[in-house]
Image (tube, rainbow, N blue to C red; front, side):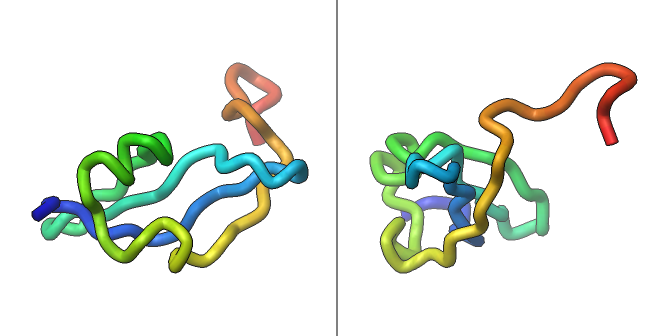
Length: 66
């Protein structure tokens, strides 16, 4: 059993899953690749997570961030 719980999956405009947001028992959140989410047996199932649309494939960095 995984120490994480799935929160939502971030999905690009073309339907590709960017990553899955997970939370541990202490409340810390992190992003995981969909394949890692599945292979680690994190619940709920990937298809049961809500989708959050995103239009950025990569996070913004530098002084243009924001």
